[in-house]
Length: 150
Image (cartoon, rainbow, N blue to C red; front, side, top):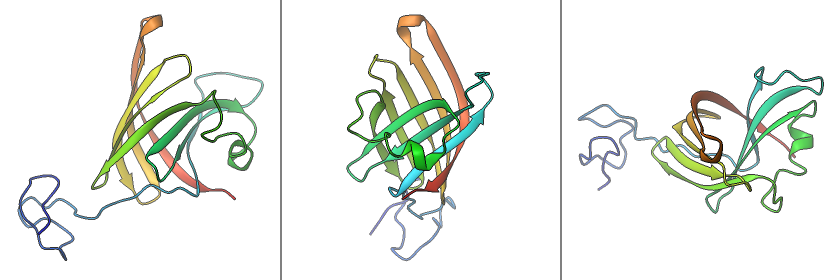
């Protein structure tokens, strides 16, 4: 028999919700056939375009993250946003129920921690940037939307 990820009580394999605590038992998944995009962000005024945050997930547990100021869309970003690019932040993700957690590390050693919810084709993530070498520590929340790219 399976158990509720929230309260730990035993649940029926056919149940959609836990009878004890009401938690959803639906297991959400991230998608691998595109990118999750948050933006545009107006934190960096630029003549080059707006700042967008991108996430890309792989079935092997790898996650990539990039913040880019550009006028290109996801179909152009996907061309260089992959595991072979040494200039992208990388990490490993874990999913339990509809909760996702991961940390990414940039090539310069900057770490960002993420935690949040998977809701259909959206990610609602709290993040914490730990750029220690510059004494920088910030937190925030972002809503990412999945964009399928070919």
